[in-house]
Length: 381
Image (cartoon, rainbow, N blue to C red; front, side, top):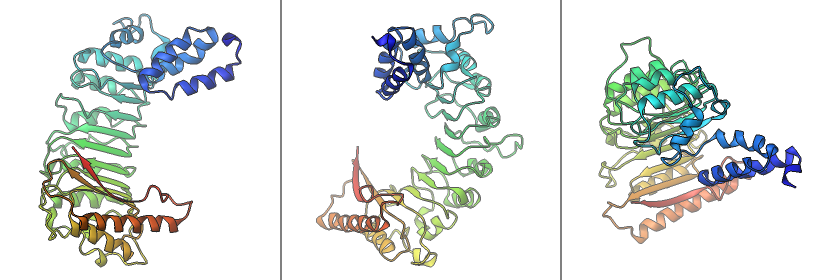
């Protein structure tokens, strides 16, 4: 009976299977290919579109995709079906040469690639540069040291690359004019410990960039960061700074938002700033904005908590200087020794009520609905 189902019904069933968690999806799609010829042709593209790779099935995956070391022998139709390849769970299962081989075989269709921990290195960059359909590239786990110049030299000509996550080595590359960023890049996430001099080449980021994440800014001087934001900040909609920049204690909200006129989401870590009520990050907002010209910031996450910080945010929202703000999250870590008082919780509750009321006034067509708005304290381990 299943073999006589119309193709449209089979495809509809397969589309539901694709929504399952990765390990279940792969098992059920494989079972579907065994039902009949019709089910086989409907399920195989979905099966190989986003394969679930683990140490248990990696060898079989390689045998299917790369049946021979010789590129001309026994080409397989399955390689063009793979669009999303996540090898991040692999540690010692692959080799650097094998990873390069896989990339070469998948170059015609690969759109998303998450690199493995130890088996991705410089010798894989040439193969990576051939993946002209690549849209997302995640190298955040790679342990091999790859310089920014080497990486950009390989990926700068990828026309569709929009999302890049990478580890960065502290070395200036501004003296190499032949190196540029991918032209369509929209989101950049950078991890690794580096200093202000590495930011020089970030000034060449394309105007298409809308999201920037720097996990560790503890060795970066705020002056260098500010100079970067003045160059690339006009189009940024999301900014995430995972640690406390040098000289940040002398910065006000006006300083932060001035070069970021389109920013909608801001994450700032205040850990290490010794927040004691004297921190002036939220002072001086009225110098730049008035209640008739609010900054478009909608989401604010602060890693750190202080009562005066909450009250300052409340005042800036209530007075209209941050009139578009609808969601505020205060993040407390397990190492925080200060216990929350009833006054702390009451202040957060008042800010929560204010943000929800403003979201209610925005109406149903707003970008953030009432159930999404508010203020809260999140405890992390």
